[in-house]
Length: 198
Image 1 (cartoon, helix red, strand yellow):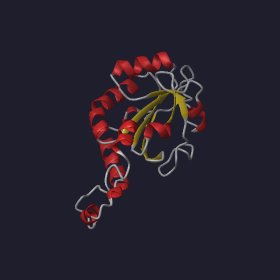
Image 2 (tube, rainbow, N blue to C red):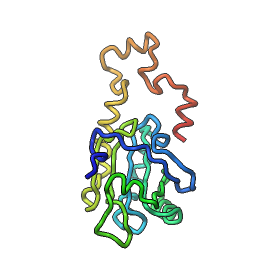
Image 3 (cartoon, rainbow, N blue to C red):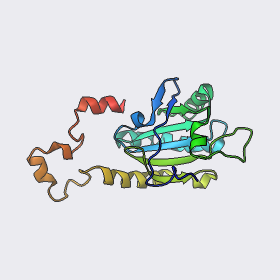
Image 4 (cartoon, rainbow, N blue to C red):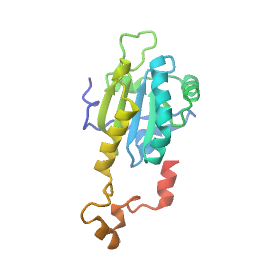
């Protein structure tokens, strides 16, 4: 495994076309929120389709929890859109037909020369593309369950949200002093936060 894919490492800020053909950078898609990043084999893989169906079930929670989700595969735009529509996903799917990520992270699935996919991984990212957790999904049970994702996202959110526990010593006093930067949306205008979320 490449040292770029380990907890504590910062993932490179890849820029790839999304399912509409628009170039998107991972950092822009993440914003200041936690992110689930799925490095997918592609639409041909029944394991990937099943994992994405489970993520679709989790999607309403992801939206209200100020969390992002992105899928990257080596599929072209047609297959990318077929996969996205076929599982009912509403998050960005990015296309890496040039296999930039596969090569850069050294995750070529060499046992499948026909499709030449990436070894599937699911990464939980802290803001700034910092890797919190890595799941290697070559075998299906290596992929995270929705409960695994909830636990990891809870850990990330506790770490990055200073207002995680409103009963923490000093928080009420900070609020009363007007120190709003300690509370969501952390001194940012709501308009900016809502624009980032859309």
